[in-house]
Structure formats: C-alpha cells, structure tokens
Image (cartoon, rainbow, N blue to C red):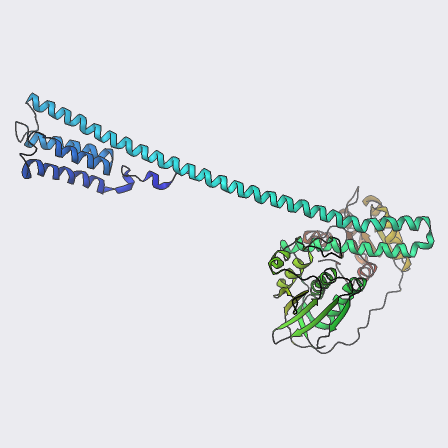
Length: 516
C-alpha cells in the first residue's frame, strides 16, 4: 500500500491548501516591489529576474497551479508598469514582446520542471513505501513459515507419541486374548490384564477430550460442597497402584475432616491424581512422595512433593502447556502425552484457583501445589450407605452393530439376571422392540438401516414406550451429542467405554450420563 505521506507533497492541493496560492501572490508582489520600487536600476537589464525567482518559489512550494499563477501575475505586472504603452496590458514594442514571450516560455518551463520533479519524488516515495511493505510481508511470511513448520513438527511429534501410547496398551490386550484362547486356565489373569489396559486407554481418550472441551469452553463442572478428605481419598485410590508399582513410600498428611471446597469432586480429584502420577513417574524407584492438605481463611491447598529428578525453573511454563513433556529420567522410557499438568492447571483455573510448580524445599525433587477457594466447614462425614442393587429382572433390548460390544453387554446384563434381546441394526431393533416391548434399551447411535436417533423416535412413537427407559450408548460425547439424544427422547446418554456400575446405575435411572 503506498505511503499516505507520499501523496501529500508540495504540489498536492490537499497538502497546503490556500497557503500555496497565498505564497504565489506574495512572491509576485515582492518581486514586483523589488523590480519597480526598491531596485529599479539593478534589474533594468535583467527585467524578468525577480519574477523568475517568484515563479520558481511558487512552483516549488505550491506546485503547477500556483506557479502558473505567478507567471500570469508577473506578465500582467510587466505589461502594466514596465513595457509601453504604460498602464495598458497591450505590449506593442517588438523587443518587449520577445521578452514577454521568453518570460512566459521559461516561466511555464520552470513550473513544468518543478511539477515533474515533485511527481518523480512522489513516485519514488510510493516505490519506497511499496518496497518497505514487500519487505515487511517477506519478514511476516518467513516468520509465519517458521511458525507453521514448528507447529507441523509439534503435531507430528504429538501424533507419533499418541500412536506410541495407544499401541502400548493394545499389545498386552492382544497377547492376553491369545493366551486366554490357547489356555482357558489363564483366562482370569488375561481378563485382569485387559481390564487394566482398557482403563489406561480410556484415561488417554478422556484426557484428550478434556483438553479439547476446555479449549472450547465446553467442560461442564458439577459443583457442590466437597470435603477435602473425599477429594484426597478419590485421588489416592486412583494413583496408588502407580505409586506402589514404583515401590515409592507415600506420606500423607490428612486434612481436617471439616475442611471443604466448592467444586467438582471428580475434576479436582483428577487434577490431584495427575500430580501424584507425575511425582511417581519422575521419581526413581523407592523414592518418597508426600501429600499434604493445608488451609487458610480463603484457600485449600493440596501439595504433592517428591524427591525425584526435579524441575528446571525455565521449563515450568512450557510444561504447563498441552502436549509438552519434560526430559524423561534415566530410570524410565518416554511415555505419556504431556497432558496432565496442563489439564490440572486448567481445572484449577476453572475453579478459581491455581497450580504452582517449584523445586522441592531442599533443592531437589518437585513440589506441586494446587490451590482452590475454600468453602465453609462442614460436619465430618459418616460412613456412606451404598444403594442396594435392584434384584428385579427386566427385559432389556441391546442394539449395536458391533457384535463384540453387543455380546459383552448382553453377558453383563444377564449376569445381573435380566433378559436381554440383541439387535445388530436399527431396523431389527425396531422389530424386536415391537415384539418384546422391553423395559429398557441400550441403543448405539451409529447403526445401519436406521441410526439410534431414528430408532429412539420410532420407539417413542409407540404407546407402550412411556415406561421404557431408553439409553444411548455411543462413542459420541460432545455437548451437541448429548443435546441431540435428549431431544430425540433418550433418558440417558453414556459414552463408551462404560464400566458395569455406570451401566447398572443408568438402567436403574440413577444417572443421566457417564461423561461431561
């Protein structure tokens, strides 16, 4: 884009306005005064010399128009006062006529030369501005290219890490299946292996989904008054196998049983679990991990301290970003997606709190402190009474085009004493529903012939379906998916994979969803 200042030059009417014309008139008046009154003898032989100066000044300062005005005014002055007949604009003397013609020619030439010079300078400024913009664009292009290359490299690194993390649990699952197939005596151990690895895969997927939800402001918090001891108990229950597997010693400073915070128990426990898992991961086997809960008037703090490899102060902010990882310690191979710390900090911020990382108090290891707003104290918890399982057997429809998923769910429900009917597509699901009129149905959304939403709509159109509990069981877990199933008429929406307890709670109508 041309520089705006380049066009606002001396010969531009927008540059000086009326002053250009005033300068032209003033310059001619001064030249005429010098010629006729102040130094008449000095310019007797160089009659037009003062006027050429006035024309040059007018054309240089004001441009072509004021310059030509100066030429015209000078010619009128000379014709009226210098060339006979005096006081008459007619010039009759041939010599005077020649002088007047030369003045007009040279004066016009001066005006055109100044105009051309200004135009050239204006074009030069435009070219310089264009070159400057080209250089800026080139610099921006180089920077953007470098940024895109860095992002592409980061994406490739993340995808490679993700593939590695997904393949790791899949390998023992495949081995466990093969072992159980060859020798049923090892089926129990194989199932335990599969359960652990599926749980690991589920955590990976959920962490990825949580990062995506937070980035799009879609993570929903189910807040309430939560006891600090409950948060700590859930966190330790989840992280303890990792800590014990690395043979670490775990020191726990229990909180006052009355301390509480207002937040989402699951999410806060998830954040603390991530800190515990990180401590276990970056501490050599046989280390010590300390968990302490402290409080002041406004804040509850959950502090996890280890005596591991420690953290470099220059890396703290980088490691708080999604998909960034520290250098693995010598005792372990690279693992993980680099999500835990970023997710923990984002959960803390959603609760109005913060996460602080620093070196351990003695200069070794790492200390991570999750600070959350404190709620009013509550009465100490009593031992919970678990709801009794329903022993009433009901008729259940399972509709899923994944044969393994449908079969395993059928077996799980039959172990609870229910009668289960399985359909492998939407059309068959509608026919079975009309035939058996089930009390409940687990329906996958992505089925052939009729999808789950269409099956739900068809069933809801039957008079007998008013007492039928319809549960969407699907891999779709975005907020828009929950809204679609709610509008279609589903009573609950569960996101695969789902554990048996959640299945049974949904069957009894105790929980609408198993994922945020």
